[in-house]
Every structure is written in structure tokens, then in C-alpha cells.
Image (cartoon, rainbow, N blue to C red; front, side, top):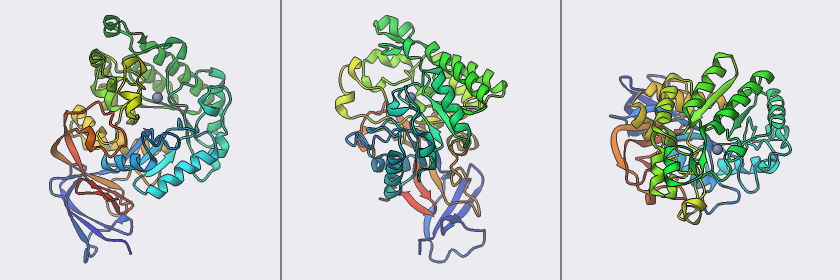
Length: 424
Ligand SMILES: [Zn+2]
């Protein structure tokens, strides 16, 4: 029999304090007996539906020195997540039923979050031939999101065929929007700072042009498009127009694009190298506004662990990418403030809906799955890379003091985090 938990005096989404009795994987009805329950002190804490990340790199199989499904899952649980979607750019690439089932099984074995594999759109992410999308959808992993993330599906004919294919089972193509011919040799955002540093720039239009093209293709096909890591003000305008035209498009923004700008590149510290690159303050302001309005639907981390030798080297040779799972909620709290309803929408309910994860995104209340997280909004903490549960250390927030601390996370009634520590 599983342990019963009584979370006492917790505020659900900022409402007046209440008790949550967790039994048999669900939140029990009011008035149910709490006899024998293990008490969790919820005073001063806010309960949120477990967070759902649509964009996580877990690096297994292939780069277990940077992250494994287990270590990434633990970092996710400590960040308040109960489900993550694992990107396909592993080695081998997750472009077959066999690989997505392997990742899915590793996630179940770790048992810390639900790991939902994303399948590659093209074989080997090479952009030449469609991968076996149907076999991945029919596999035990039940893949519904497909992405070549790290690479753009730049061939418009392949993109159209992928959209047509996934429409049959209401799948979605998640696009890393980057016109490769416009970003050859790019090291950072193309603008005043790149000109000053003499580094080759990644122009905003390389992202905006692909989003515009894909929105037109998705509208033409009538299929679902999801735009990964939107980073420019111009992209927001394109998405606004596409949504107004009735295109089935959703979009994500990362915590780092909501907070950091291309000025960070002046340090030449490769921890700030990321793809798409950090943009300008004008972009940051537009992204925050679009997230608040819902033009950008969700926050996704693009958690991208890298081994030390791939990151602590010269800027030009460093791999792009940053950690994000353990800091995402704190960054969002910092930039949006404690608007719990908005946070639940952008970090749990909507990503769960896009990914088709029916067990996630539910506000903890009687009868709902006990899949939630408890955050202490008054706590402030200093980010220490050595304290991360990730196997990598490439956080851009080292030394920063952030608001909000995850105290506990429950997945189907079982704690994965208690007292701020991973249970296993
Ligand atoms: Zn990407």
C-alpha cells in the first residue's frame, strides 16, 4: 500500500490555505480520513500543477557524460517538473521506434518524472528523408511531437510532408526555426554588440523567415506547428499574424531569452553561448509581453547540458546551450512576478495539452491526479553550479540570487522531492 500524505495549510494557486490529502495517486475528497498520513507542512507554500517541459535535452543515449535520463529527471523533479519531453538529438538519433522506446523505458525506470520522447522528423536529423514517424507514433512511447531540434527542417517540401503525415494522428511538428543559409558561421546575435566584438552574427530574420514560411505551410496543410524557443520581437509579430489567420500554431520561449541579452557575450564566457542566441533588450521586452498575453503559449527550458570540455573552451569552439530545469520557475517568477494562474497555464496546463499528456496539468483538488509541486515563494537562493542534480555545470545563473524554491514534488501521489531534496 502506498503512503498517504497530508499537505497541511497550503495555498493552491495563491488561494486561501487548505489541506491536501494525497492517497492512491489522487487528491482525496474533503473530509476523508487522514489517519496514518505523513504530514507535509504546507504553511507559506503554493501548490501548482506539476510543471511540464516541452523541450529538454537528456543526452542519453550517447552523451551520458553530459546527462542521463536519470540525472536529467532528477534535475527536473527538483525544478518542480513532473513531465519532460526529451529531444531527439541523441546518439543514435531518436528517429526509430527502437530508440524512442529505449528513452521512454529509461524514464520509467528512473521514475522521477514522466519522460515523453520526441521523435526526429528526418533520418539522423540530416534533413534529407522523413524518419519513420508512424512507427514512432505506434510504439510504446506513443510519440506525438516530432522535431529535428538543434537543426531546422529547412527544406520546405520535407516540412510540408511532415506536417501532412502527423496531421493524421493529431501530431505536431516542433520546429527549430533557423534558416541555415543565413546563419553560417554565426557566433551570436547579429547586431550592435556582434559588430563591436567582430563576431559573425545570427540575424533575427533567419528565425522570422522560417516561422513565417512554416505558419503558411501549417495553415495550408491544416496541421499543428509548434515553434521552439522564439527569441525575437519580429517572431512575435509573425506569430500574432498567424494566430489571427487561424493557423494552428503554438510557441515557446525559454527562461534565458526572457532574462538575458546579447550584452553577456562581451564577457566571452561560453556559458552564455546558446542557439538561438541571446538577443537585445527590445526582444526580451517583447517576449515577456507576448508570454503575458498568451501570444507565446508556454515557457520551455531548452535544458541543454554539456560536458566541461565542450563548454569551458574558447567561445568559437564551445557548444551552444544552457542548463534550465532547476532554475526555470525561479526565472519566470523573477520576470513575471507571482501570478500563479498564469504560471500554471504557461508552464503546466498548456504544455501538457500540446504534448497530449492527459495525466498532467491538473490543479491539485479533490479527485485530480496528485501530480503537483510545492513552491516557497518567499525563499531566495543563490545558484551554485556544483549543487546541481544535472551531470553538467553550464548554468548561466551561477552566483545569482533567485526567488522561489521548490520544496516538494509529487508524481501520482508519490513524492519525488521532499524538503527540497530528491527522494531517490
Ligand atoms: Zn533548438
